[in-house]
Image 1 (tube, rainbow, N blue to C red):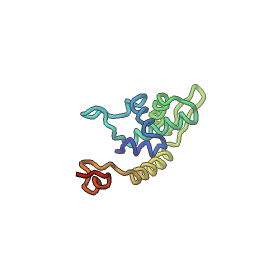
Image 2: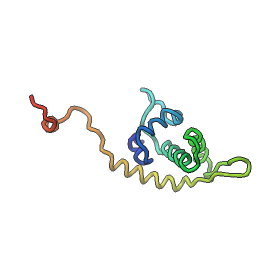
Image 3: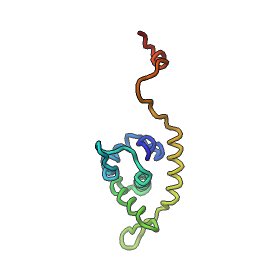
Length: 131
């Protein structure tokens, strides 16, 4: 499971854009946790969003339609979906998985997790707090 910041970094988009996708057309992708919607994303969800973003960029498909197409591409064993009566759209999902796995690994390594709890005494002195 990855945070939205790590997912956005690996997808090459800003966290706000990813949040807009997850609260809009991608709402069904995010699992419901006991305290509302969980923001920890699995690799399958990130793969779907990556395909939708690529379809939007390259073919001008909306994100909502791109997410539907992405689920169809991932579910199909030969990674293709019919387009009209005579065409088909093929997507190299296996290659995307390799690239996305590497990008997610890099994002996890590069990410500084915010410290929780009270700041240490040394950090208080750095900020100029005096008592």
